[in-house]
Figure 1 (cartoon, rainbow, N blue to C red):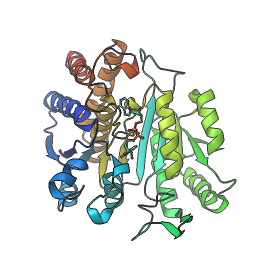
Figure 2: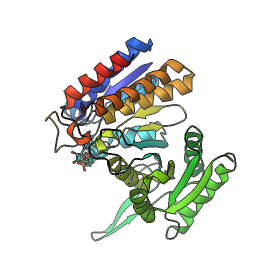
Figure 3: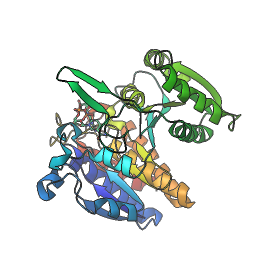
Length: 354
Ligand code: NAD
């Protein structure tokens, strides 16, 4: 399996070096023959190539079996004519990575846990209110006059149905419960279509229990009774916001692994950003990056029907749990270790459990 690895901005180089060490161990132990191809993206690339995404990088990614994208300082990238392309948007759009899967799970020993939970936010990733990706060309946020802005939101039946299928497929491997999160009381047509599409897809999954909740109420429900939920399917912006909340409820945004998957390609990417407030201090939690990498291995294993990749991913999750339970994670999950030391502890537990 060949994986393009882009360390990213801010905390990216620190957390990615842990992820690549762990992948090396897994490759040896499970005979995965992983080939990691390091590439620049974001600020490093802008400095070297004058653009955050160099020419030819997309082709290299398409020829590989997966991409791991480190956190990006996307807010800094404002002007595409100056090479400031948002790498997250770029790959999601160009590779049609429509399903952003964001698990939130509590771990025993994680200091900051509010209530036990184990759920997954399945977020549509290619349209909605995201002005940089919902048009074929140009953005969908317009300055009408100096003081008036119009932002367009695109919702299509095709995108609603394919994200619903991703959610129901996932639910079939879990507790068989899908909650549709929407704002159809206000966005009656767009979110109305989203709900209808989800219920239409649900007919093919009679074993899965389905309910729906308005997004603002969902924020309260998920805080009050997170244990009630299994798979939450929603549109782009709601999913982006909801998943940061569920990650933090589970203990820390630093545990928020995620994968962006399409029919052919997948990109592992932690749900959080480049965290400039803690960059370079050896305190960032690297496990979000590691969990994302594990999700990519599992995705590849499922696509290729290669069970060793799925077993490697499972072994990694077990080792993460052990590391946190031993107090050897970073401070945000109740541990006493720095980024690098937490990574070394994870490798130790991984090797012990193998
Ligand atoms: P952020 O997600 O980077 O950080 C939010 C908070 O979470 C900060 O306090 C940070 O220290 C903490 N945090 C994040 N990751 C952590 C980790 N691994 N371990 C411990 N704590 C962690 O959000 P921000 O500071 O608002 O944004 C910084 C930059 O990241 C901006 O340029 C923003 O646009 C970008 N961003 C990119 C993405 C993406 O590419 N997917 C997502 C969110 C933000």
